[in-house]
Length: 131
Image (cartoon, rainbow, N blue to C red):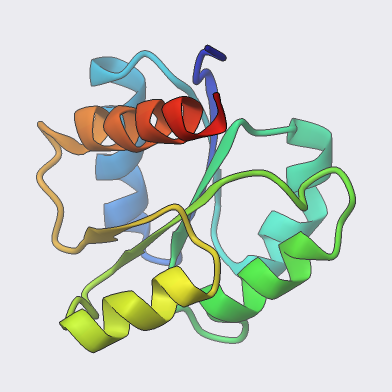
């Protein structure tokens, strides 16, 4: 089973960036790179080589689904698992996001104390499914 170490986190709200980064780094022990929008994620992701991408759905300019589509076009990132983070968590919305190929959907607002555990559980499930 591959260990989850590097997470690319894409979020446009600075306060949410700070809370999520602290939760993932301090409680999860992950190496986290934060990008403020989809364009920055596309510029930074290939060089960073994340194990997992956590992607906000609603961002100005390039939203999460558009960013996901562009990430999938990059050979080094085409198979990198992506988790959406969003306040849009009605069952139909979650089904739609999953149909885009994301590994999971995390509801906003999230609990900083359990965020790292939630992300790790998704990673563990993906690793089991791959075996």
